[in-house]
Structures are given as structure tokens and as C-alpha cells.
Length: 232
Ligand code: DX5
Ligand code: ZN
Image 1 (cartoon, rainbow, N blue to C red):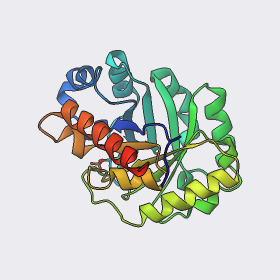
Image 2: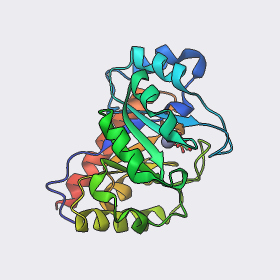
Image 3: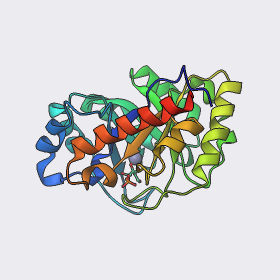
Image 4: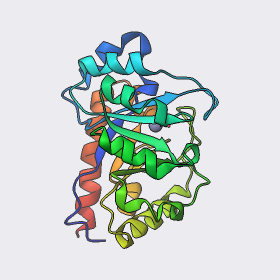
């Protein structure tokens, strides 16, 4: 595959796997790392069977962050909280397709707040449901695990799904980035990028490693090698 025009994928470590007792240190040590975005998982215990953190914690991370906050809202009725998350420091706001019966309105709302607008798809949700909204999106987050928990195994069907999504975005004239979230490691990162992924979220693989900054550098470097060898 010729990837000569493919920009380097963005890396977004997920704070769900960070040490919540040391969020300032966790945020600051990523300042000069290969992290492009800081992925923040908001869970409400209703849309997903888990509760993580919300607006005050996001504000605290934002105070120490050097990179844009990529906020993944795993919550019901996200439309009520978008402005508050923007004010707390979100650069990207991603809502779930499955949580938004009026998705078009929510996307317009996010854009009017000046944030990048993203939609996340659960593993069972086919990519074609985005056909009529793809051109309005800045980001599509493909869940490669069932949302709600870190540390789960990558669902292999994601690779097929990413390729199908890439095709759909091209057909719709959409410039949306494809983000993959869940179970991302060095074992699947290159294949995901080759299938069309632009942004890789990694929680446990980064924060549970002995040196998260070194792990991010290793991801960036190994992806560069994999993508360069594609040109051969
Ligand atoms: C899952 C979250 C993910 C999670 C990924 O609901 O959306 O962002 O933090 O964690 P890992 O990389 O450990 O699967
Ligand atoms: Zn996430």
C-alpha cells in the first residue's frame, strides 16, 4: 500500500488508566511526549455501566495540559452538558451515536461551541448509519471494545470496520478523522493505521507501562517504521 501522503497518526493516551491521585503529575509528564491529544473518558453509569469522572476533573486536567483535550462522552442526553464541557477545556467533543436520537442537532451544537465534533460508534453499530451526517463531522470514534472499561481486549472486526468507514468518508466527501478507542497496543496499531485510522487512543497500554512517555515514543517510532516500509 502506498502511504506517501498519509500524515503520521495522532496518539491520544486515555486518562482512564492514569493515576487519579496524581493527575497533575500524570498530565505534566505528557507535556513533552508523543501524545497529540489527551483522551478523557466521561461515563455516567447509565449509558455505560461505569462512572468515571466529569466536569471538575476535566477542568483540573486542563489546567496542567499542554495538548488539546479529546473528550469522549459516554453519557445519555449529552446535549445538556456540552457547553459545560467546552468551558472546562474540551477541544473535541465526541458523543455516542447510540445516545443521540437528534444527532444532527447535537453536532451543530458542538460546532457552534467552537469544538471539533465527533461521533462514537459502539462495536455493534454499523458505519453506514453515519452516511447522512458524515460530511458534518470532524471525527468518528470507532469503539474497538464495548465502552465503559479500560483494559479490555481489542475486537478484531474493528479492522474491517475501519476500512469500510474510510470508504464511506471518502464517498461522502467527509474530512472526518477516524479514531480507534479500546485495546490499542503495539500489536494492532500499525494494522489500524494501514486500514485508515488517523488517531489511536491507548489507555492501559500507555499508563500501565513502566514508562508511559517511552511507550508513546515507541508507538510513534514503530508506526513511522511500519508506514515507511509500506512505501517500499
Ligand atoms: C473505554 C474508553 C477507552 C479506554 C481505553 O470505554 O472509551 O478510552 O480508556 O482503554 P484501553 O486502551 O485500556 O482499552
Ligand atoms: Zn474513550
